[in-house]
Image (tube, rainbow, N blue to C red; front, side, top):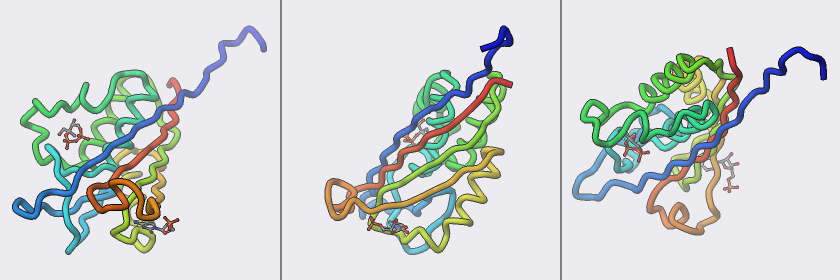
Length: 165
Ligand SMILES: Nc1ccn([C@@H]2O[C@H](COP(=O)(O)O)[C@@H](O)[C@H]2O)c(=O)n1
Ligand SMILES: C[C@@]1(CO)OP(=O)(O)OP(=O)(O)OC[C@H]1O
């Protein structure tokens, strides 16, 4: 290695889980930055979008500046009902203000439904615009196993790559 300072990229990880809202207090489903008409919604202080939240958490993790709760705590009334897309855009702004540029974010969620494939591009376009960097989204079931298999909630995991500006 030369004397030149090596600028290393940094990876981050984010995991988010939201339970389905109770039948008594139905909510719309927001997932991957999209509204899913006719699907049962998820509980949460915000819109409960685990894909957008995992992506935001991975960005904070990569930058080493805390997590979702650090920046958007549930004690903050201004984030009640907040859109996951807005939170992701704000997370990207904070990460850039901390001195990083964003390489990419990859998210995978686990759910029996909705069937994601037909709307993947739409979701990726919305989330990439929010992050100002490529966001890819994949989906899987858990083959009927666990809380996602029983249809109790949706989980999402994300990785992010950032590099110093
Ligand atoms: N909510 C989902 C879940 C899965 N997919 C697509 O189906 C493929 C097969 O999923 P398995 O869990 O059965 O392996 C998966 O790779 C996705 O392409 C989906 O679109 N929406
Ligand atoms: C997004 C926030 C804030 O509105 O609330 P929730 O919608 O409950 O989501 P969660 O992923 O549990 O995490 C953290 C909070 O910061």
